[in-house]
Length: 431
RNA sequence: UCCUCGGUAGCUCAAUUGGUAGAGCGGCCGGCUGUUAACCGGCUGGUUGUAGGUUCAAGUCCUGCCCGAGGAGCCA
Image 1: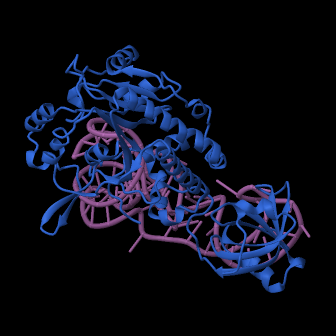
Image 2: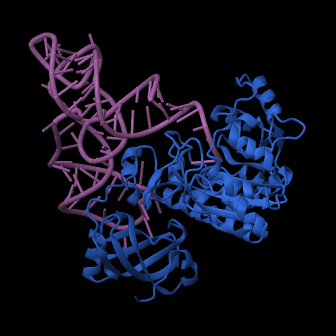
């Protein structure tokens, strides 16, 4: 293919002739003057075609080209205050590569159902493009930060054997006669990995067959799970706030244009720096009862509680020491108060709720053995996990960060479905 | 799974107390050298989700079903 320029680099081509390859985003027909808004994945530029400047064939192409047709335009790059973006192409040739007919998504309003059925095309819209660029930035930042802070990336399996008492929230698949389940978490495997590598993380898709139908849930979502040997609850929180602050600040810096497209008010995001406020579950319950949001000690927080709590803070807030009964079986209990455990959730600002759940894991063979027995979990499936406490057990902590929830928060988008290219939702697996 | 709301033109919606189904956008034709979701004139558009029921008459009222949205629970 012949060399061509990209719109994001267009400033370097001012005064030169450039060839752009892309798609027609929109067009204004002024008769002898055609304004073509061309996008190429890296940006959008206005290409101006004047009848006297081009061949009759090229002008005809400009006049008849339709929304989302693929095209190649050649022209001189200029700065122009009248142009959206500040740069403009004075065209001397237009070639239609493929003429799109009746592209369904117009620049006007559409409903959710209509757009979701056309997700493969919706991805081209400026807003979706901006959100997914932010997603890619957050992913890059996650890896950058962890890789440069001593974490080893060791991904964990997606096909896993039955390992809990309740398989109702697991997707089931055939494993040559055995039953395999799609992973809900890589954490247990991470715990094995840290005993070899110290600090590790896995980052990949996880699956929950929950019949959740809310703006915060996907059946398939991406979760980052760092795990650290020799880290207690406090160190866990420090890593979380450092990481989250880095993600937010990096995105503010590198994706300012996209956040502007999304009309994101970044006032609160700019304040996201360590340390984050830390409150215990007990004081969270107190705050909530003062607010008149009913909660009984021992109950886990629902979405309304998380929103009400977060409203008291201008930064994400840690809630730690949850009741042991409402957290996972492997959480370390507080030696002073066994009714609470060394767990911590991070609640985002502005009503986005929980973006991280984690804490210190139990290092005790005896306690975990009891837990497995008490909950009626098949012991055989956990023998390897118990081994980790038999051969050099150490205090350790880790957490899971929901990528899509984090991206939704940073972008300020209402629904998580827009933060992943092809969301898997209750009752929706197409396209 | 439960609660609430909805389904009318390609899209977004309107349609009075049950009385001839409408607008904007899109598309098509024409006009314009500075448009920013352009504007101006014309044309094009319908098995009102589905199956029954009530009625002289149903988009409108009743019942079942299907589909969607918002919320709850659960969680990242």
